[in-house]
Each structure stands twice: as structure tokens, then as C-alpha cells.
Length: 202
Image (cartoon, rainbow, N blue to C red; front, side, top):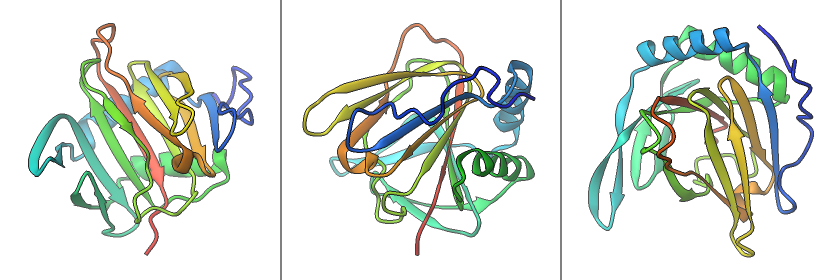
């Protein structure tokens, strides 16, 4: 296992204003990241995601799972999910992320993108269940994908490439002023698993 071996400055803010995004690079060696990817792929209770769009329930190709300290409910895209109890492997990853970011998290939303045709549209994670201006830590395993930010007023865009085993953190007023997305691509033909550790409030 390697920690910050590539000397990436994780204190650098990749946003020019109105929020903070830190990229830590790879927290794991390639072999360890691949091992974790396989564990998550086969042990997480994956389900197809659902969303209510224009009054109709849509089932996505992307799969999701929701875990937490307790059976938190979390509503986004007008659909409510209930958190499952942590697995041993997720708790281990949560502890690692908390140590790296000096933040505390009580839940994790996981996404499984089967290939580059699956992505996420522009959005911000500003649901009322989330701690306002709280940190959201995003771990990536599997295929490297581009991750994009767009300022809500100026439309300025920032792109980052998230590597296998890497950590990205969004905090401060990022969700208030910026949208983010995982754009689809024809260049990626393998899956990516993304874990976003969050803080749910009562």
C-alpha cells in the first residue's frame, strides 16, 4: 500500500473561487486498488438506480448502493433510499479516508458505471439531508474517468482525471456555487466504482 507516494499537493484548491476541491491522487498501489475494486464489485448490494423525471420513474443502467452508521434515508432525484449497515471493507475504507481528510463521515453512496457510456449529468449534492458545506470524499476504483465542474453563474469549467485508487474531496461552498458531472465517453470500455463518503444530518 502506498500513501501519497506521487507527491501530489492535496492542499491545492482546483477551483478558482467559491468552493474547495482537493485531489489527493492515488491512495493505493495499482494492485491494491484492483483488489479493492474486485471486493466491492462482488460484495456490495448493487441495485439499478431510479429517478423521477417529468413525473415518470426511470431506471438507470448505472447501479448504486447506500451504506451508513444507521438506516439513514437519503432522497435525491425524488427517490428515497435507506442505508444498509457498513461492511467490514467499507468501514476500513472510511477510516482511511477520514484519516487522510481529517473529516468524519457517517454514510457512503456507491456508484457502479459499467463502461464509458454511463455517466452522471450536471448536478450539485445539496440535498437537505446532507450537512451544509460539509466535505464529500470521493474514492475511485477501476477505469480512469474525467470529472468536470461548472460554475453556476460564470459557466467556467474545470476538468480532472480521476485515477484508479484515487481520492477527491469537495468541501466548503462548492455545492452552492458549482455543478459537477461524470461525462460519458466512448474511450472507456471497462467499469468504474465510485464511493462518496458523506455526512448526513438529522
